[in-house]
Image (cartoon, rainbow, N blue to C red; front, top):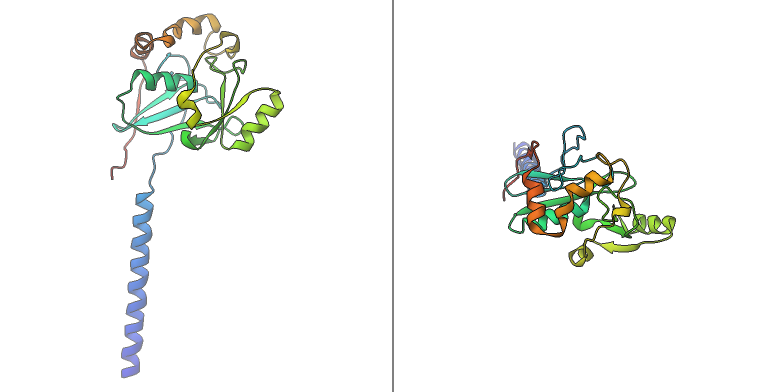
Amino acid sequence: MKRKSGTLIKRKSAAMMLMVGLLAAAAAACGNDEPEPAAINPAVDKCDLCNMQVGDDGFATQLLTKEGRVYKFDDIGCMFAWKRDNAGAEIVIEFVRDHYTREWIKLESAFFAYDPSFSTPMAYGLVSFKDEASARKFIETEGKGRLMSAADLKSHTWERNPGGMEHGHGGGARGEEGQHGGHGGNDGGKQAHNNAAHAVTVIKVSRP
């Protein structure tokens, strides 16, 4: 009788420990639940700054605000111009894409290759990568460029080089220059953003 009682107690203890472990794992998973990047649909997605088409390519970027709104951009320069014009926005997370694989990565973890002559959708000349090695490889292949981290972008001048405009992006360099003419000032950037007539993705953000 004592042996059966001891065995039963051991089984109950093991079951209890298993349950506690599962609950702890579930709590940890919930605590690390980060928002996922939204898919890009070139047929309907327009840049939230310049209103140009957002391509499903290595240049697309996006950010999520505390209100659960996703803002998409065709060029990382557009995203930083939007942040400048909307300094009060509460941003939860920002994503860029690896130029080689198109994998979405958090802005803070990315590395970048910069040169004014690099061809990008809106001629900011900045190309993003998932790691430092990939960025260095791109610079070596191109034979030019400067390696930058996410921290370096805070002091970047964000100047545009019309000669580095990616050809065929949304209707030609002349039309794009007209759309992006206000990038040098806040009023122009806000006007371009306010004129963007397209649906904004809304997703649920996990609150602590």
